[in-house]
Every structure is written in C-alpha cells, then in structure tokens.
Length: 275
Image 1 (tube, one colour):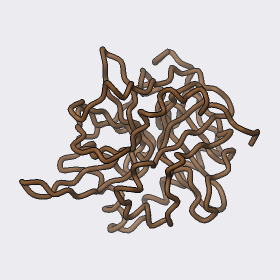
Image 2 (cartoon, rainbow, N blue to C red; image 1 turned 135 degrees about the vertical axis):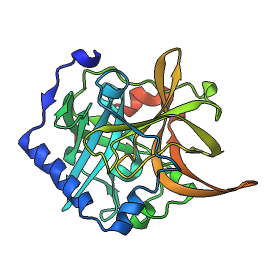
Image 3 (cartoon, rainbow, N blue to C red; image 1 turned 45 degrees about the horizontal axis):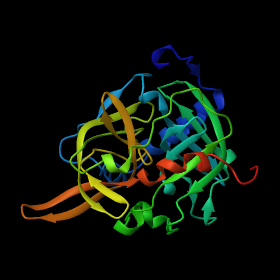
C-alpha cells in the first residue's frame, strides 16, 4: 500500500491531546530533559522518517489518557489487529494493572497532523513474566525487569496496513545490523529511525544495543532486514545501561525480545472477553 494509502487528518480531540503531551514535555526542567535523552549513545544517529512506505506505515503512535494521566509510546502492527509495544507503556502503576484498553489510541503511520488509521484497544496482553514494579522503574530499570517488558494490544478494529512479521528466532544473532524506530520526545510528531545499530549483549529475554533512542520511543520496534524485507525482533524497553568492558564502560539501551511469540499471534489476537 505504501504512499498510496488513505491518509487522514487528526480529529480535534486527538490533536489537542497530542499538543498537551508535547507541551508537558517542553516544560520539563533541564535535568529531566537530559534524562529523557539519555538513550542517545555518543553521536546522535537518529534521522527523521517522513514516509508511509513499509515498514514505517506499520509503526504507530500510542496515546493513553486515563485516570488523570496521559502518556505516549510507540507500537508496531504484527497482525492486522495486534500491536506489539512495551509492557510499561500500558501498565497503570497506581491501579496495579493495565490501563482500560478503550483509553488506548493507536494511530498507524502517525506523521505530524496526519495518520493512516486510528482505533482503540479491545484488550491488552502483558508478558506473564512482567514484574509490576513502582513507577521508579521508569528511572532505574534493572536487567531483570527488561527481560519481559513487552505487551500486545488487541485492537478494536483491524488496520488495513501490511503487518511486520516476527523473525524466526533461529535466524537472529547479535551480529545482525538493527534498525530502531520510535516517536521520541524531541520529535513527537515524526518517526525517528536509527539504522545499522548493533546488539552487544544478551541476557535471557533482553538484548543490549547501541541503538539511539529517547523517551517516547518505548515499545518502538527493533527491525532486522532479510532479502529486502523488514522483520521485528524486539521492542525498546529502557535506556542508559552501563557495562564494563576491557576498554572501559560503555552505555547501551535495552530491548525486549518478542521472537518467542512468533507462533502465538493467532491466540494473542483474541480477547477472552469483550472489554
């Protein structure tokens, strides 16, 4: 479908909602701003991606407004009615459970004031191993916490965009070149993409890579390319992990693998009950 898809303008409600989130980020103090961008490793290698061609049309913005709070993350269509994202994006720390799915909005191909399609959640499925920690997780995620930081949002309506297949785990190694995409806090209305980054370490269900990222890109996809086609292998979880090497300390960002869910998509796309 690519650039020939029907592009829609944001409704007034969602436009105001997005502006509110942007203004909230713009009023943060300098220290907080530095925290938000702690996922930039050395030189900033992110570039804006203003395209509706695959795979970028399957990446979308997640907006949540519930219980007096607002939030935004990134998600990716892995089936017509199923979005992969980070568990901490959909988890309500105050209520000790996921946000009501109807308050979660997914806008596929979100670009400035336009998007390809919009729908809300029907149900949310969080990794069964996900640890519900206090909000401090956002500041100091541990290696253990990021190993299961993924979730799937079942959408109320399927989206007519080619989904991104999950790679066969047998075909992925830490030698693969990666591509990370997300709606970062310093460019909330346009996708930021870092190509040709690399994973250095693996711990259980998490990989640690030098893919530049920032707040807002949580849940954003980690792609690999095979024969000209993109596949998703993980979602961005947390930033700023320090590792000791013979040459000194290095900083890496965490991404949570979803490779093991490749054969479970049909079941994941079903809700046990109507939300």
